[in-house]
Length: 138
Image 1: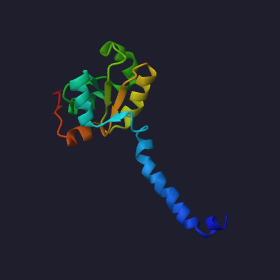
Image 2: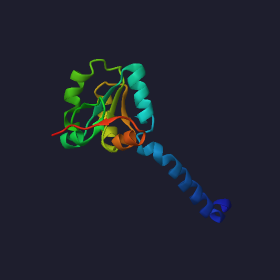
Image 3: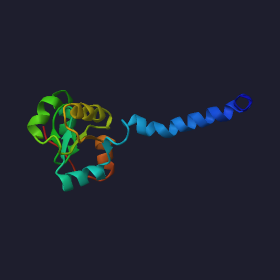
């Protein structure tokens, strides 16, 4: 007990440091359910993963990953069964930043899509990795 009272500052710093190291994993839903753009492309090429963009219509028209299927977030559960019949096949869900896609991937997993993943960083990370992007003219 004497050690704790004499070194409370060091103990506090150690606990805070551990929390800061763990934060990236916690904030990305455990990390295991998010993939980088490179990992997503590997899944698409090797395992025929489906890339689904859940952004709004305007966001999708402005820019989206080449080959991504557009399904607005609110329609995901209803449309997913029509797009991906095999629930064991990888599904990579993306949005603009990766924030909305984490929740959408969780909903897809709850619906039985065991390999539903979020694209970490969303379209921003996709562009930063120099992956192909396309637009739709209105």
